[in-house]
Each structure stands twice: as C-alpha cells, then as structure tokens.
Image (tube, rainbow, N blue to C red; front, top):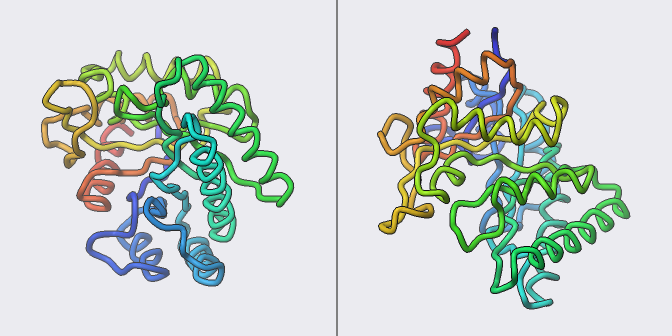
Length: 279
C-alpha cells in the first residue's frame, strides 16, 4: 500500500535558499512540507508571512509552524502563563497568515506542581487560548508536542488527554522525544505500534489523518534518560525509522512528517526513500 504522507524539514533547507525561494527548492528536490521555525522569535511581519504562504501554496508545500521555546502553560507563576498564552496566540496568528493549519509547541514544565494539578492548569490555559483565537476568527490547530525530558509536561498519555478534551487541539507526535524520555524505549516495530495504537484508540482514524509527526534519531543524557541532542538518520542512536516506515505504509497513514535531524532536507529525502521501499 502506498502512503500519502507529506515530508519535509524542520526549518529552511540547509543547501537551498531561505524565504520564499525555499518553497521552490523543496519542490525541486521532491519534498512537500516544511515546519517554519519561530522557536526564538515571532518577529516575522504579515507581508512576508503572506508571501511565504503564497510561495508554499504555489509549490505544493504544506507549512506548519513551531512556536517559541519560551512557553510554559503550567508554570507556577501567573505572569509566565499569561505570556505563554500570548505567545501561542501570536504563533497562531502568524501561522494563519502563512496558511499553516497547525502550530507545534512545547507545553511546558511541571514546575513543582503535582501532575494532576499541572494537567488542570494546562487545560485552563488552552481553553483561554482557544477562546481568544475564536474571538479573532483564527482557525489553527494547536499541537502540544510530546516532550523529551522527565521534568517537562508532555507525556504521550497527557497529550492524548488534552487532544480528546478540545476539538482544536491535536498533539504533535515526536518519536525522538518519546524514545529519549523513557531511556530509549523504542526498540522494535511493536514499540511503535503500541504508541500509534494508543493515539488511534483515543483520536480515532480521523484523528490520525494529517497528524504532525516529528522524527530524528536522538542521544540520551549521561543518565540514560532524557533528550541530549538529535542525530542524523542512520546514526545508530535510534529510534530506527525503518520500522515506523513499514507501519505507515501498511496502514496507509497520511502523516505530515517533519525531519528534525541536523541534516534536515537531506535526511527528509532519506526518510522518503525508506518509505518508498515498503510501497
């Protein structure tokens, strides 16, 4: 069975132009997705954002956006939570200018709160974000990302729960983070299946359509638990993309796969070739 997945890099390509020219370059090399990186700044104006979105549309490139790292919806400080809400709203506004329908963001940290209370605070913050977006008629999906460190809010179970609570919230599934957070948990096809089955059981088959997936191999910390740094596909650190690719093709998943390897579009193309082997 063939897969209708879209694949592209997390950010502008290493070897091609940035800005609008990157869209034509991605099309030329055979990629059809890109995650715009707003992790450190939300300064792009409306005009260049519209131009980027237009270029993406013309070249068949689907855009997503990664919001700032400086987000903590479960902070024990009201000011931090309020600023985090504003950063997500601004990210969504920029995404809407670009025609990106999904924004990825790290939801935050437990911040010394019991996990149950952190979940409650996260839900309250997301409710506020969604109300503000509705008032502004901004139609963008919020994608809290599975996180890679034990002190971060964002286990698979937590984000599946958030995704079932709100219509416009659907997790970004980051396999490297899941792998590293649990000390290298993804070792076989069965491990991937367990993760995907848990998501599909809660979100249904429709919830799997156009699910945003991040992938890279990853090195854990010296303690063996938690993310240290990303590595290229085939580096040996794991997880192995081949087992995931086999499942994607067999089940016909239509994921939006964002390559977070340091080699960006180079490894995105490698992942595309791996998927093609199972067609």
